[in-house]
Image (cartoon, rainbow, N blue to C red):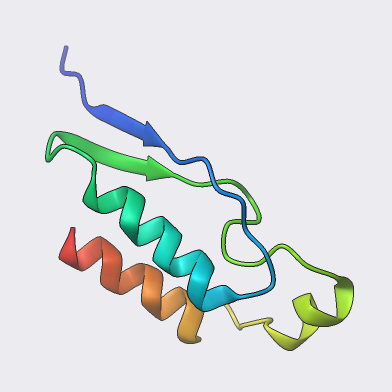
Length: 76
């Protein structure tokens, strides 16, 4: 049996997606290298109203928010 470390991030996300991404990255930077999986809350990238959710909606597999998360996974 093998074991991997998992990290659960706690965030106070809002309408500013750049700030939300920066919060996620800042917390990831503090994690030990032994962490293999990082979990975030369901609204980690955007916590707002219906209009904002529609404005920031991305197709699956494309878009700047998904791209930023992909880059973090590659870097860390």
